[in-house]
Image (tube, rainbow, N blue to C red; front, side, top):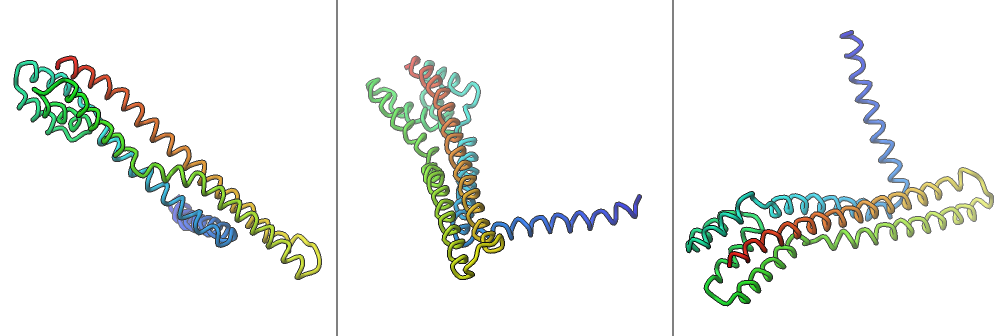
Length: 219
């Protein structure tokens, strides 16, 4: 059994290496158009992960935070309320801080300051997500360009050989299908990532509004 497992490990390693080589060779057959498509896939993946991490950190609403701040305001301790808000590193902490700083001024001014800060925090969460929308549109177009290039390659090779054969057509078909498939996959993933991030932000905005209504009732 030990000998079999010892032999199986290098075989598995060789198999995985060959598989990676095969995928790489397949992508390379897509031609030069594959370079921007692969770059767009890397960019979209980076933006998605970076935004999810930022949103998860900023969009958390600590349980009891709004209640604690509201109680401090009701008890006439705005400094303690401000301290609670500043110690919280999430978006709601910064939003409540902007409202507490305006305590004593007209209610409309307090609400406007909270609204401005809320819009700013949401804008920060949406930062760079527009690029995902662009990639979702551009990647399939690049795949289409690769398809056209593949068709041109087929007819060019036919004109040179002056005959039609599977070997001549195969190269252009590889480029055509690989570029189309890669462009569509990257475009669909970027589209899904963009809307998933927007869904997370919308979900947080609903919870945020509920918390702010609770705070504004105290004022």
